[in-house]
Length: 356
Image 1 (cartoon, helix red, strand yellow):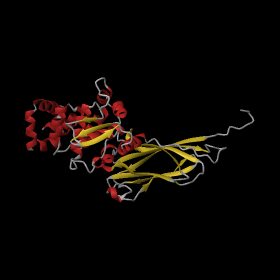
Image 2 (tube, helix red, strand yellow):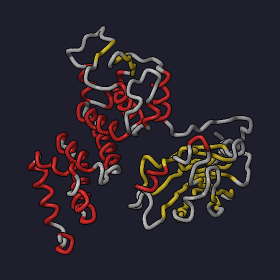
Image 3 (cartoon, rainbow, N blue to C red):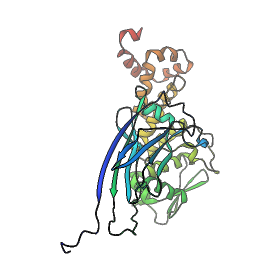
Image 4 (tube, helix red, strand yellow):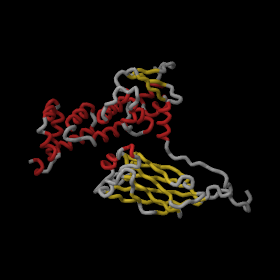
Protein backbone atom coordinates (compact mmCIF):
# COMPACT_ATOMS: atom_id res chain seq x y z
CA UNK A 1 0.00 0.00 0.00
CA UNK A 2 1.32 3.47 -0.89
CA UNK A 3 2.53 5.52 2.04
CA UNK A 4 0.40 8.41 0.73
CA UNK A 5 -2.76 6.36 1.12
CA UNK A 6 -4.12 6.55 4.68
CA UNK A 7 -5.08 3.35 6.45
CA UNK A 8 -8.82 2.85 5.80
CA UNK A 9 -9.35 1.31 9.24
CA UNK A 10 -8.46 3.20 12.39
CA UNK A 11 -9.25 2.70 16.05
CA UNK A 12 -9.13 4.79 19.16
CA UNK A 13 -9.45 2.48 22.15
CA UNK A 14 -9.80 3.56 25.76
CA UNK A 15 -10.47 1.49 28.85
CA UNK A 16 -12.11 2.51 32.11
CA UNK A 17 -12.61 0.43 35.27
CA UNK A 18 -14.75 1.32 38.26
CA UNK A 19 -15.78 -0.22 41.57
CA UNK A 20 -18.89 0.81 43.46
CA UNK A 21 -19.47 -0.02 47.13
CA UNK A 22 -23.12 -0.76 47.96
CA UNK A 23 -24.44 -0.68 51.52
CA UNK A 24 -26.83 -3.63 51.74
CA UNK A 25 -28.90 -2.65 54.79
CA UNK A 26 -29.84 0.70 53.25
CA UNK A 27 -30.78 -0.72 49.84
CA UNK A 28 -32.23 -4.21 50.32
CA UNK A 29 -35.76 -3.00 51.06
CA UNK A 30 -36.10 -0.98 47.87
CA UNK A 31 -39.23 -2.28 46.13
CA UNK A 32 -39.53 -4.51 43.08
CA UNK A 33 -38.94 -2.50 39.92
CA UNK A 34 -37.28 0.32 41.86
CA UNK A 35 -33.58 1.04 41.62
CA UNK A 36 -30.68 3.04 42.95
CA UNK A 37 -27.90 4.31 40.72
CA UNK A 38 -24.16 4.52 40.91
CA UNK A 39 -22.48 7.87 40.42
CA UNK A 40 -22.14 8.79 36.76
CA UNK A 41 -18.81 7.68 35.33
CA UNK A 42 -16.93 8.25 32.09
CA UNK A 43 -15.76 5.70 29.53
CA UNK A 44 -13.77 7.27 26.70
CA UNK A 45 -15.75 10.49 26.97
CA UNK A 46 -19.13 8.76 27.18
CA UNK A 47 -21.14 9.10 30.39
CA UNK A 48 -22.58 5.93 31.94
CA UNK A 49 -24.19 4.71 35.11
CA UNK A 50 -25.33 1.40 36.60
CA UNK A 51 -28.83 0.83 37.95
CA UNK A 52 -29.11 -1.67 40.79
CA UNK A 53 -32.53 -3.24 41.49
CA UNK A 54 -32.27 -4.87 44.96
CA UNK A 55 -35.57 -6.76 44.52
CA UNK A 56 -35.29 -7.19 40.77
CA UNK A 57 -36.85 -5.35 37.86
CA UNK A 58 -39.65 -7.86 37.12
CA UNK A 59 -42.59 -8.43 39.45
CA UNK A 60 -42.97 -11.98 38.12
CA UNK A 61 -39.77 -13.00 39.93
CA UNK A 62 -41.23 -11.91 43.31
CA UNK A 63 -38.00 -10.34 44.53
CA UNK A 64 -36.02 -13.57 44.16
CA UNK A 65 -33.38 -11.98 41.91
CA UNK A 66 -31.41 -8.76 41.88
CA UNK A 67 -31.10 -6.93 38.55
CA UNK A 68 -28.33 -4.80 37.08
CA UNK A 69 -28.52 -2.39 34.17
CA UNK A 70 -25.63 -0.64 32.41
CA UNK A 71 -26.99 2.55 30.87
CA UNK A 72 -25.36 5.00 28.46
CA UNK A 73 -26.31 8.63 29.08
CA UNK A 74 -24.66 10.12 26.01
CA UNK A 75 -24.80 8.82 22.46
CA UNK A 76 -22.18 8.29 19.79
CA UNK A 77 -22.87 7.08 16.28
CA UNK A 78 -19.79 4.88 16.13
CA UNK A 79 -19.03 3.69 19.66
CA UNK A 80 -19.02 0.04 20.63
CA UNK A 81 -18.57 -0.83 24.29
CA UNK A 82 -16.98 -4.12 25.28
CA UNK A 83 -17.69 -4.42 28.96
CA UNK A 84 -17.44 -6.61 32.00
CA UNK A 85 -20.03 -6.25 34.74
CA UNK A 86 -20.11 -8.23 37.95
CA UNK A 87 -19.71 -8.49 41.69
CA UNK A 88 -16.76 -9.32 43.91
CA UNK A 89 -17.42 -12.02 46.48
CA UNK A 90 -16.84 -11.38 50.16
CA UNK A 91 -13.20 -12.34 49.74
CA UNK A 92 -12.73 -9.64 47.11
CA UNK A 93 -12.59 -11.97 44.12
CA UNK A 94 -14.74 -12.15 40.97
CA UNK A 95 -16.69 -15.35 40.43
CA UNK A 96 -17.93 -17.10 37.32
CA UNK A 97 -21.51 -16.96 38.58
CA UNK A 98 -21.46 -13.16 38.99
CA UNK A 99 -19.52 -12.03 35.94
CA UNK A 100 -20.77 -10.93 32.53
CA UNK A 101 -18.62 -10.14 29.51
CA UNK A 102 -20.48 -8.64 26.61
CA UNK A 103 -20.46 -6.11 23.79
CA UNK A 104 -23.06 -3.58 22.81
CA UNK A 105 -23.44 -0.85 20.22
CA UNK A 106 -25.16 1.64 22.45
CA UNK A 107 -26.36 4.06 19.79
CA UNK A 108 -28.85 1.33 18.88
CA UNK A 109 -29.66 0.15 22.38
CA UNK A 110 -28.86 2.62 25.13
CA UNK A 111 -28.87 0.12 27.99
CA UNK A 112 -28.17 -3.52 28.77
CA UNK A 113 -30.33 -5.03 31.51
CA UNK A 114 -29.83 -8.33 33.34
CA UNK A 115 -33.13 -8.97 35.09
CA UNK A 116 -32.05 -12.26 36.72
CA UNK A 117 -28.48 -11.29 37.42
CA UNK A 118 -28.26 -13.27 40.66
CA UNK A 119 -30.50 -14.73 43.33
CA UNK A 120 -30.84 -12.39 46.28
CA UNK A 121 -30.07 -15.28 48.66
CA UNK A 122 -26.77 -15.94 46.83
CA UNK A 123 -25.85 -12.26 47.09
CA UNK A 124 -26.42 -12.23 50.83
CA UNK A 125 -24.56 -15.49 51.43
CA UNK A 126 -21.50 -15.09 49.19
CA UNK A 127 -20.98 -11.42 48.39
CA UNK A 128 -21.85 -9.25 51.39
CA UNK A 129 -19.16 -8.52 53.96
CA UNK A 130 -19.56 -6.04 56.80
CA UNK A 131 -22.88 -4.99 55.22
CA UNK A 132 -21.25 -4.04 51.89
CA UNK A 133 -20.76 -5.59 48.50
CA UNK A 134 -18.83 -4.39 45.46
CA UNK A 135 -20.12 -3.86 41.90
CA UNK A 136 -17.36 -3.81 39.28
CA UNK A 137 -17.60 -2.44 35.76
CA UNK A 138 -14.80 -2.35 33.18
CA UNK A 139 -15.43 -0.80 29.77
CA UNK A 140 -13.34 -0.76 26.63
CA UNK A 141 -14.61 1.67 24.00
CA UNK A 142 -13.65 1.67 20.32
CA UNK A 143 -14.30 4.90 18.42
CA UNK A 144 -14.76 4.93 14.63
CA UNK A 145 -13.98 1.23 14.00
CA UNK A 146 -14.69 1.65 10.25
CA UNK A 147 -13.58 5.21 9.52
CA UNK A 148 -13.63 4.79 5.72
CA UNK A 149 -16.54 2.34 5.61
CA UNK A 150 -19.39 4.19 7.27
CA UNK A 151 -22.03 1.91 5.81
CA UNK A 152 -20.51 -1.33 7.10
CA UNK A 153 -21.64 -2.97 10.30
CA UNK A 154 -19.34 -5.41 12.06
CA UNK A 155 -21.07 -7.30 14.85
CA UNK A 156 -19.17 -8.10 18.03
CA UNK A 157 -21.05 -10.87 19.73
CA UNK A 158 -21.32 -11.28 23.49
CA UNK A 159 -19.49 -14.11 25.20
CA UNK A 160 -22.53 -16.25 25.95
CA UNK A 161 -21.37 -19.71 24.91
CA UNK A 162 -22.99 -21.35 27.94
CA UNK A 163 -26.37 -19.82 27.14
CA UNK A 164 -26.13 -20.88 23.51
CA UNK A 165 -25.16 -24.45 24.40
CA UNK A 166 -28.04 -24.66 26.86
CA UNK A 167 -30.41 -23.36 24.20
CA UNK A 168 -29.07 -26.01 21.82
CA UNK A 169 -29.85 -28.68 24.41
CA UNK A 170 -33.33 -27.33 25.07
CA UNK A 171 -34.15 -27.16 21.38
CA UNK A 172 -32.87 -30.73 21.00
CA UNK A 173 -31.11 -29.81 17.78
CA UNK A 174 -28.75 -32.36 16.21
CA UNK A 175 -28.81 -34.63 19.27
CA UNK A 176 -27.27 -38.04 18.62
CA UNK A 177 -27.82 -40.02 21.82
CA UNK A 178 -30.88 -40.62 23.99
CA UNK A 179 -31.06 -41.69 27.62
CA UNK A 180 -34.09 -43.45 29.05
CA UNK A 181 -34.85 -42.83 32.72
CA UNK A 182 -38.06 -44.09 34.35
CA UNK A 183 -39.78 -44.13 30.97
CA UNK A 184 -38.71 -40.59 30.07
CA UNK A 185 -36.36 -39.99 27.12
CA UNK A 186 -33.73 -37.25 27.34
CA UNK A 187 -31.49 -36.54 24.35
CA UNK A 188 -28.07 -34.89 24.22
CA UNK A 189 -24.89 -34.54 22.16
CA UNK A 190 -22.26 -37.24 22.49
CA UNK A 191 -19.27 -35.01 21.83
CA UNK A 192 -20.26 -32.49 24.51
CA UNK A 193 -20.83 -35.20 27.12
CA UNK A 194 -17.54 -36.90 26.27
CA UNK A 195 -15.59 -33.65 26.40
CA UNK A 196 -16.79 -32.99 29.96
CA UNK A 197 -16.74 -36.44 31.53
CA UNK A 198 -14.24 -39.27 31.13
CA UNK A 199 -17.00 -41.68 32.13
CA UNK A 200 -19.24 -40.49 29.30
CA UNK A 201 -16.26 -40.59 26.94
CA UNK A 202 -15.68 -44.26 27.73
CA UNK A 203 -19.39 -45.03 27.58
CA UNK A 204 -20.02 -43.25 24.28
CA UNK A 205 -16.74 -43.62 22.40
CA UNK A 206 -14.92 -46.48 24.13
CA UNK A 207 -13.88 -49.71 22.37
CA UNK A 208 -16.86 -51.65 23.73
CA UNK A 209 -19.48 -49.23 22.41
CA UNK A 210 -21.95 -50.57 19.90
CA UNK A 211 -21.89 -48.28 16.88
CA UNK A 212 -25.66 -48.40 16.37
CA UNK A 213 -26.48 -47.77 20.03
CA UNK A 214 -28.77 -44.74 20.07
CA UNK A 215 -30.54 -45.19 23.40
CA UNK A 216 -28.94 -45.85 26.79
CA UNK A 217 -31.05 -46.92 29.73
CA UNK A 218 -30.18 -45.57 33.18
CA UNK A 219 -32.01 -47.34 35.98
CA UNK A 220 -30.81 -45.62 39.15
CA UNK A 221 -31.20 -41.89 38.54
CA UNK A 222 -34.20 -39.57 38.49
CA UNK A 223 -34.90 -37.74 35.22
CA UNK A 224 -34.89 -34.40 37.07
CA UNK A 225 -31.40 -35.15 38.41
CA UNK A 226 -30.12 -36.20 34.99
CA UNK A 227 -31.39 -32.97 33.45
CA UNK A 228 -29.69 -31.05 36.25
CA UNK A 229 -26.42 -32.83 35.48
CA UNK A 230 -26.81 -32.03 31.77
CA UNK A 231 -27.38 -28.39 32.67
CA UNK A 232 -24.00 -28.36 34.43
CA UNK A 233 -22.25 -30.21 31.60
CA UNK A 234 -23.48 -27.67 29.05
CA UNK A 235 -23.12 -24.48 31.14
CA UNK A 236 -20.66 -25.17 33.98
CA UNK A 237 -23.28 -23.86 36.43
CA UNK A 238 -26.01 -25.17 38.70
CA UNK A 239 -29.61 -24.97 37.52
CA UNK A 240 -32.59 -23.56 39.36
CA UNK A 241 -34.87 -26.48 40.11
CA UNK A 242 -37.89 -24.73 38.57
CA UNK A 243 -36.04 -24.58 35.24
CA UNK A 244 -35.75 -28.39 35.19
CA UNK A 245 -39.40 -29.26 35.73
CA UNK A 246 -41.35 -30.26 32.62
CA UNK A 247 -44.82 -31.68 32.05
CA UNK A 248 -43.31 -35.19 32.08
CA UNK A 249 -41.43 -34.65 35.34
CA UNK A 250 -42.44 -37.16 38.00
CA UNK A 251 -40.55 -35.38 40.81
CA UNK A 252 -42.21 -31.96 40.71
CA UNK A 253 -42.01 -31.66 44.51
CA UNK A 254 -38.30 -32.45 44.88
CA UNK A 255 -36.62 -29.79 47.00
CA UNK A 256 -33.42 -28.03 45.97
CA UNK A 257 -31.66 -29.58 48.97
CA UNK A 258 -32.50 -33.11 47.83
CA UNK A 259 -31.68 -32.27 44.20
CA UNK A 260 -28.17 -31.12 45.14
CA UNK A 261 -27.60 -34.31 47.15
CA UNK A 262 -28.62 -36.40 44.14
CA UNK A 263 -26.43 -34.27 41.88
CA UNK A 264 -23.47 -34.92 44.18
CA UNK A 265 -23.99 -38.65 43.74
CA UNK A 266 -24.16 -38.11 39.97
CA UNK A 267 -21.00 -35.98 40.10
CA UNK A 268 -19.11 -38.83 41.78
CA UNK A 269 -20.48 -41.36 39.31
CA UNK A 270 -19.59 -39.37 36.18
CA UNK A 271 -16.40 -37.77 37.56
CA UNK A 272 -17.62 -34.19 37.39
CA UNK A 273 -15.47 -32.45 39.98
CA UNK A 274 -16.84 -29.01 39.19
CA UNK A 275 -20.40 -30.17 39.81
CA UNK A 276 -19.33 -31.74 43.10
CA UNK A 277 -17.74 -28.49 44.27
CA UNK A 278 -20.77 -26.39 43.37
CA UNK A 279 -23.23 -28.77 45.04
CA UNK A 280 -21.22 -29.04 48.25
CA UNK A 281 -20.97 -25.26 48.41
CA UNK A 282 -24.71 -24.89 47.82
CA UNK A 283 -25.55 -27.51 50.48
CA UNK A 284 -23.30 -25.79 53.01
CA UNK A 285 -25.57 -22.77 52.68
CA UNK A 286 -28.53 -24.87 53.85
CA UNK A 287 -26.87 -26.05 57.09
CA UNK A 288 -29.08 -25.23 60.04
CA UNK A 289 -30.10 -26.64 63.41
CA UNK A 290 -32.77 -28.68 61.61
CA UNK A 291 -30.63 -30.04 58.75
CA UNK A 292 -27.08 -30.38 60.05
CA UNK A 293 -27.25 -33.94 61.41
CA UNK A 294 -28.83 -35.45 58.31
CA UNK A 295 -26.42 -33.55 56.04
CA UNK A 296 -23.46 -34.68 58.13
CA UNK A 297 -24.46 -38.33 57.86
CA UNK A 298 -25.02 -38.12 54.11
CA UNK A 299 -21.69 -36.29 53.66
CA UNK A 300 -19.87 -38.98 55.65
CA UNK A 301 -21.54 -41.81 53.70
CA UNK A 302 -20.45 -40.36 50.35
CA UNK A 303 -17.06 -38.90 51.34
CA UNK A 304 -18.14 -35.32 50.68
CA UNK A 305 -15.38 -33.85 52.81
CA UNK A 306 -16.09 -30.16 52.25
CA UNK A 307 -19.74 -30.54 53.26
CA UNK A 308 -18.80 -32.75 56.21
CA UNK A 309 -16.32 -30.16 57.45
CA UNK A 310 -18.98 -27.45 57.24
CA UNK A 311 -21.41 -29.56 59.29
CA UNK A 312 -18.82 -30.33 61.95
CA UNK A 313 -17.87 -26.68 62.28
CA UNK A 314 -21.53 -25.73 62.63
CA UNK A 315 -22.17 -28.30 65.37
CA UNK A 316 -18.95 -27.42 67.21
CA UNK A 317 -20.01 -23.78 67.45
CA UNK A 318 -20.99 -23.40 71.12
CA UNK A 319 -24.22 -21.51 70.41
CA UNK A 320 -25.36 -24.34 68.12
CA UNK A 321 -24.00 -27.32 70.04
CA UNK A 322 -26.28 -26.95 73.06
CA UNK A 323 -29.35 -26.81 70.84
CA UNK A 324 -28.32 -29.74 68.63
CA UNK A 325 -27.50 -32.20 71.44
CA UNK A 326 -31.01 -31.66 72.81
CA UNK A 327 -32.61 -32.91 69.60
CA UNK A 328 -33.43 -36.55 68.97
CA UNK A 329 -31.64 -36.47 65.61
CA UNK A 330 -28.33 -36.02 67.41
CA UNK A 331 -28.56 -39.47 68.99
CA UNK A 332 -28.54 -41.08 65.53
CA UNK A 333 -24.86 -40.11 65.36
CA UNK A 334 -24.23 -42.95 67.84
CA UNK A 335 -24.38 -45.28 64.83
CA UNK A 336 -21.39 -43.48 63.31
CA UNK A 337 -18.42 -43.63 65.71
CA UNK A 338 -16.02 -42.02 63.25
CA UNK A 339 -18.27 -38.96 62.95
CA UNK A 340 -18.33 -38.62 66.74
CA UNK A 341 -14.52 -38.92 66.82
CA UNK A 342 -14.24 -36.10 64.28
CA UNK A 343 -16.70 -34.00 66.28
CA UNK A 344 -14.73 -34.54 69.50
CA UNK A 345 -11.60 -33.34 67.74
CA UNK A 346 -13.42 -30.20 66.67
CA UNK A 347 -14.67 -29.57 70.18
CA UNK A 348 -11.18 -29.99 71.64
CA UNK A 349 -9.96 -27.19 69.39
CA UNK A 350 -12.43 -24.73 70.88
CA UNK A 351 -11.24 -22.14 73.42
CA UNK A 352 -11.85 -23.29 77.00
CA UNK A 353 -14.63 -20.77 77.60
CA UNK A 354 -16.59 -22.13 74.64
CA UNK A 355 -16.35 -25.72 75.85
CA UNK A 356 -18.07 -24.96 79.15
